[in-house]
Length: 101
Image 1 (cartoon, rainbow, N blue to C red):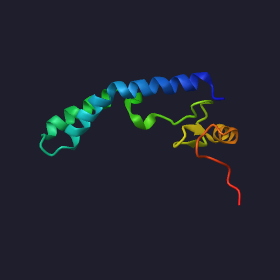
Image 2: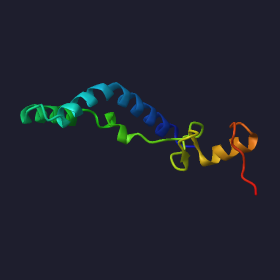
Image 3: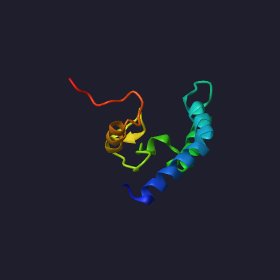
Image 4: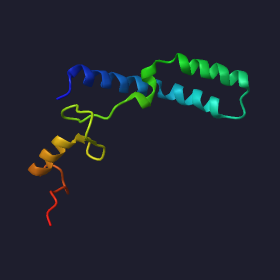
């Protein structure tokens, strides 16, 4: 089980990313677009740099929905490897079974 503080920090980050997503995309579009002048691009870049660091989606970390474990995460199921195996053995995940040949 991950520390509660780490799980809460990740939840806070995801809320921050959601709050600033529209503003970040507008600024990044201005920076990328060739129709804006260099001065406008520089102003947009400065505004982007002044945003909180946690507003960047790159800083988010995938964690297991049950334990909060950051490593051994399976994106398709949203679980860490340990809980995925337990759930599969109990038959809680439809269509997933242990391989045997």
